[in-house]
Length: 346
Image (cartoon, rainbow, N blue to C red; front, side, top):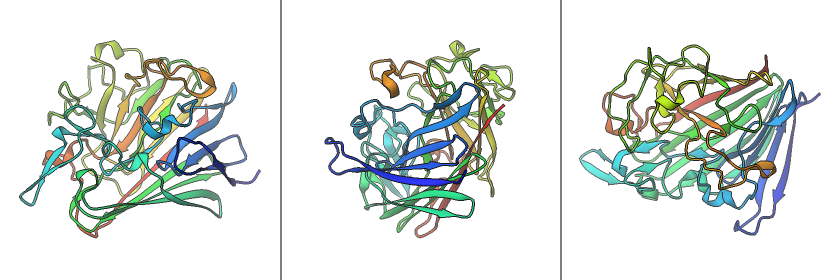
């Protein structure tokens, strides 16, 4: 079976223009549908011992992607995760970013890269099909310095690897830290508490009551944060106030090539997701704020712990922590990242 890419337009009145959706398929049951609004994953279907199921969380009503309260599937930036008080200093100047998470800045702001249309085109090369998305952001947008451009390319191969390549630059010094915010549930429904997670990380970042890093990097050994060996997500989740929403540190720097950072497996269906990334760590979020009030795909309520996020990027709030890997990118210097989502059945 051949790799294919197809394109269609969604006429949804809530958007100011048609949404372009691309579907990549590898001919072996794996497919991913991408949207030019938010450079986002709108669905991802994967085979398992129980057939083919959508293993991502989606909205039943497409218009909810405009506000997207849970950031389903989107590319987030210019800076992923939280920046304390939405502030940082650079070259003697204090910058105030949009505060869209209480006192703090989250995932690029109130209307960051995730809530805009991107330019896009599909492509095919030997052994891969893909879609590339491009966006421009003006100086001062959400408080960030510099005129900014980002390019995000998704590709799918026959083996079942979905690769996301990121590239970005600005004409002024500033922080850049991109990621994807897809929620995974490898069972396709229900909660994820029985699914097994492994994180290749011996430390995590401690946070305060607003989920802002304290600067401390405790060891995971002997705590509920220890996922060095496969462990059911729900086994010790009650020991973590509010549930998991922390950054696990795999290394102190970016890697030249993607390295295994996380493995998620659903014992019942056998679906397995391996996440490889160039990034120094991963934010693991256990869907704590899902409350069942909104319906997802097939009309099912989006229940608490109905999906998890595995977000590879540089440490949160790194611009305010000199001891963390730097997110500061000099003017006209290119930021890059590569992450691979590898699906199999075991």
